[in-house]
Image: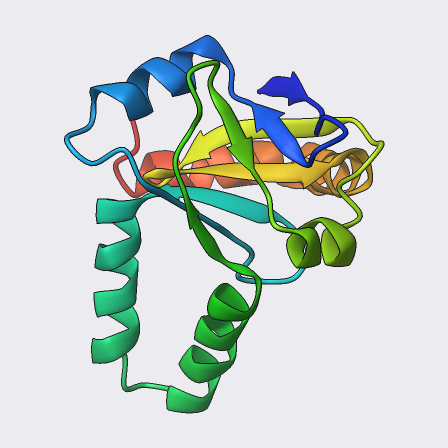
Length: 145
């Protein structure tokens, strides 16, 4: 977990480890969005293309996929980090997720960076605290190391 904040222009300064990773990729573009209207996500553009392919091939519940894909496109934008490792979040995304003027928490998950407000972080922490022991047991039995 890394703490962060948006600056007055709506840019997030990436922690050095994330900036170095993104900078090492052949394509510098990122896709910044929200799938659930609660948390933001920063995808390397190649990873986002993989996610788009998932939506194209997911037929189990097409309406569900359409709703999530709509969110992604409604709030998403392609950006490139600037030379100082700052990533611009568009104004609609900032407004809907209440990202401005608050402590943010970042972590890497499934090929992208999750960005959550303090409120969502505390909510997730509470859920994690109450389920961690049984979750570790279940996942260990399934082969997690």
